[in-house]
Length: 256
Ligand code: DAK
Image 1 (cartoon, protein in one colour):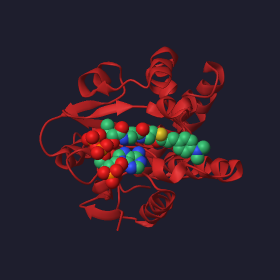
Image 2 (cartoon, helix red, strand yellow):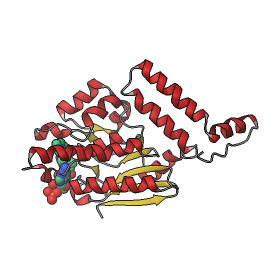
Image 3 (cartoon, protein in one colour):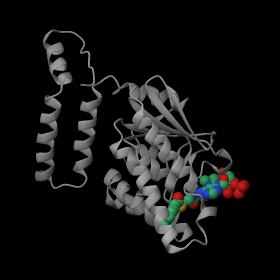
Image 4 (cartoon, helix red, strand yellow):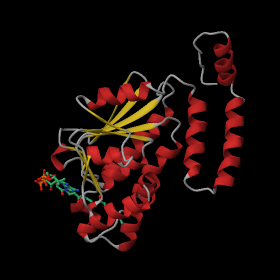
């Protein structure tokens, strides 16, 4: 299987498993990623989703270039919409996602990582949107998500030059949350443990609020925050969290 879904405790792990092509995204692999994300959404015991790539060279070298040629414009547009809709599933997934970038994350591979809630990089990770070298521009969300994460100027520089950014530079520009040494899946599980113990519905409300920051005015965003923070206040977990503080004990959240 070119897309493998496994579970490690309360974390689902989707592995792109096509190392002979540096885990390049064929249209079938995109559909399989979509199906795997849908399956994760049904699992009640999953509290985070991790993505990684098989092999020691690549997270994902991007869209399968060999598949992109000689297609009609209608097919190309549908292809872009397929990639966009699969990656957009991560926005509405009930749990946060972490891209574990263990090598090259180019083109569509970087766009997958950008669609995740968080990104960790191995020391040898390399990031880039090299579409311009092929006479193309990003089609799976890169022109929209990259500027929201690193700012317009840095995003334009990556998109117009196609230059590669190494792990240290990616961390410095806020493209990744951290650079990790050693086993990146173990690092991802540890990173996820930093939030999986909290109330899932409350985490989801926090993600919704932050997502809206990218597309609303400050005044509208503050109204959304007032609504969503009030919704969080209505959960039994909020009552439990505040009671536990006063009773000087650890909160026992029940996802309610
Ligand atoms: N697609 C297909 N095969 C790939 C691939 C890719 N993106 N990347 C690597 N491979 C394959 C290579 O062809 C090679 O297989 P063989 O040819 O030997 O059978 C194998 O993986 C190993 O690759 P290399 O031999 O090249 O390995 P190196 O270590 O020498 O180089 C590299 C690694 C990552 C620097 C190099 O492979 C590379 O430059 N790869 C291409 C990176 C790239 O340009 N990615 C695609 C960006 S474009 C759309 C609009 C736009 C897009 C999509 C859709 N629509 C409107 C629908 C654009 C999307 C992109 O992602």
